[in-house]
Length: 317
Image (cartoon, rainbow, N blue to C red; front, side, top):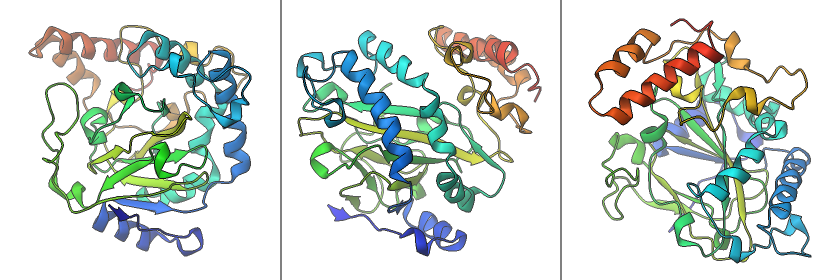
């Protein structure tokens, strides 16, 4: 596998950043995010994982030594319970809004920056097959405007044995690629692109990639949990998928629950102040909830519409 192309923060400008993204589908910026803002979030998360039994008893939580008997992954009820607690941390939501991250994001999409509110924590147990992230494109799940980007950041140094992301260079030029059933994954060997690139990604590095860029995680072959953060962003002048603003599941999460223990804070519902153009619109959602082919899809559209009305009533588009 070839090594990542890299950019130093001192060399950053909007023209070079856009050129790299257009050509390769990704940009790796080294040493961008201050460790003094990453460290406290890592400590909060590892303290939660320790109390939850995911880390070895009597170990230092910051070392992230996994309790293999607790191994689980997204979709498991025990994983969801711990994940929901982490998702409720104010510091988790504040991370992508740091000045350093926003500066680079705006170089790609302009001053009209929308950071999607539902960032994702990735909590990857070592040597656990169900937790492996296979090749996929974020646009498959996120939808909306194709000119949406992901910012991926590990909260600790992530050498290759810990399973950092790998990127299929140039794959964003091939459009949305076929997936296997309902998995969202692209079958190994069928991906379209140039060469796979990868390598160590450290705390403070920021990996940016296009919504159509094919990527996967290398296997975590260490003894530690890998902890990273994904956030998506775009220009708010482009259409926004309303499913990125509210929770589309059957009721476990809501913004009211997330914000329940926060003080008065400008991060709460920050996107309400932006002139967003929803696609599908509320009118289109209502029609989709009535006419979509499958019952599951109709119910999902109905939930999105219901939650937009309940939590974001001022969004009328």
